[in-house]
Amino acid sequence: MATILVVDENPIERRVVRMTLEGEGHRIAEAPDALQAMELLRSFAFDVVLVAMGVEKVHGYDLITHGRALEGRFETRFVALLEQADDKGPVESFIAGATDLLIRPFGAPELRDAIDRATAPELIDLRDRLVGIQLDAYETAIRLQEQARK
Image (cartoon, rainbow, N blue to C red; front, side, top):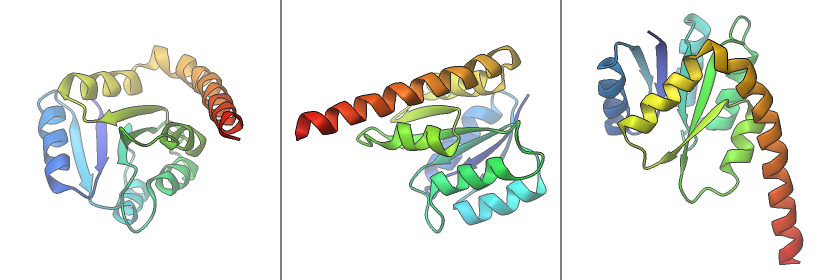
């Protein structure tokens, strides 16, 4: 089972995620903000970090970027938790280094699927290649939307 860090300023959201994933046998740590999450990342090796992108003190995107840059943390997978109305969030998340996204509201099945994708060794290399392709597609779509608005 995976060791997972949940970063979200909402204690209820953290608790729901914790209860869901502990029920699957995963080990869970929590951080209410990106600063505390960075301290945990410096001290422990996590398989997956779930990051609510609106976390205070240090932006969630910065947490992903700096967390991936820590020595020995390249294998850690970062999953961005985004709000439904966040149009640029997917692109910015992938640019920062997220390997997957979850759009709120999400349920237990979507959460389990995201953890399965993040921890499936046979999917990791393929997913990393696809992230680059998806990022190119997102950037192209945004560029076309901006051109259409002009």
